[in-house]
Image 1: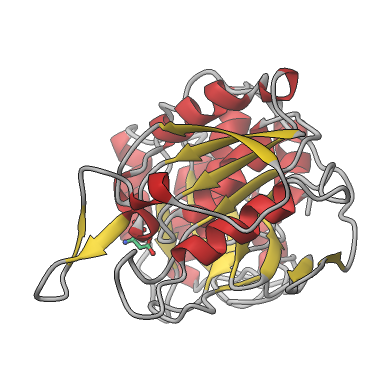
Image 2: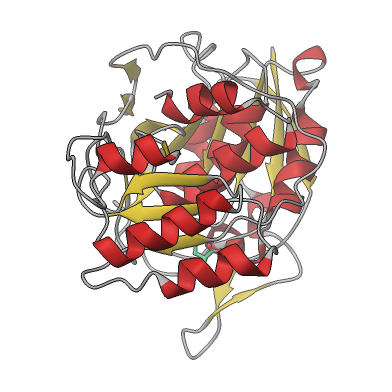
Length: 321
Ligand code: ASP
């Protein structure tokens, strides 16, 4: 019989609505009472946190990493329940740090446990089905909700309230779940993982916009309080002239600047050769994180810096899909 470790961390999947319909955290996780229609499986359940996922920080992610880094010695798979608001970040952090081949599956819910059409138990059961599936190993961390399987690498929360909120704009879902089958559409190439022991680096994320002022970037450059910065740049990774001057100040102060696209879909890559264009930003020393959004690039830079990667290793890590 397969043995699965279940880690509950909180989120809407563990919450309930009160008589006014306001969603709140309860003392007892309703998932602890869950009954499933599953083949025989041995579940080891731990309520590691009971937090809304907005309260999850890299420290909590590190705690999950430490709990899981040797999980393959005792378990055939792992399911983590988590709030959906930062689920993509925790899944990505674990994907980039855990060197495991057993399935690690994360899930959550958009409707709390006692709301009409609650999706929590269903998603939890789907995640367990994926975790025990014979084809689920060697796929990195997966996110399972609403009958879809997504790679942590590409998944993002796309809708504030809809149950069909998770999507992988670049790659499409990695698989689907039907009543009787788990179907994987493609295999992803293995990517680099780095162990992690500390998460104290300070890395803000700034969003670019038409007319972005470079002054805020210069202030960061002067403050010496940050270890790196992510800029969600325009289109394929471009900035206005004033913002480009601010980037130069950051680079002059030896602060790593990572460029991603603020676009919802596509790859950031240097294309334009003028002040603020991607080619000039890269020539100046900014690093392109090609296939991730700002919140994921932040975690990649954090992991890279905490591992003391050389500038070329850091660039390769951020370039990688
Ligand atoms: N605010 C909730 C959370 O992330 C949303 C959810 O779980 O769906 O904890």
